[in-house]
Image (cartoon, rainbow, N blue to C red):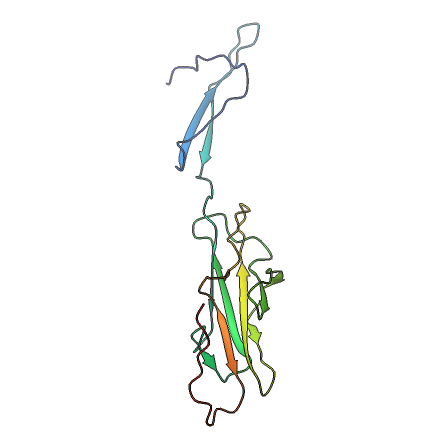
Length: 172
């Protein structure tokens, strides 16, 4: 039988693990009343997981399309996939996204399924899909793509391709 605890309780007990580790700590305790009666030795198990310090990852994809290249398909469907690995999980309502032509919008629309990117009939357009995820530890990844960041850019050429030659959707 283990020896009874020998420290007097005077304040809250801090139970900690080494930074970034997962651990289990056992706290043993008992009390003795003024008449000298002692309770049976009690114990509590405290388990701690390392804090979630990593931001989530969100990936954009479009079946059969390489971002930044011209396509004649309109609408073009873009899908988002968010993961927090072994972290706290993706927060409800994320990922968020926005679409614009200047790569400056702030993601504010909840992603619920494929995003359809369109271009007006008979025109060429470039649309930027910016997106962001936040995890349950409230850690956010900066919106992508930020200016200068290589990310999803959909270039749609809905003008007749006969005689238009090679069109390049400029580099970032």
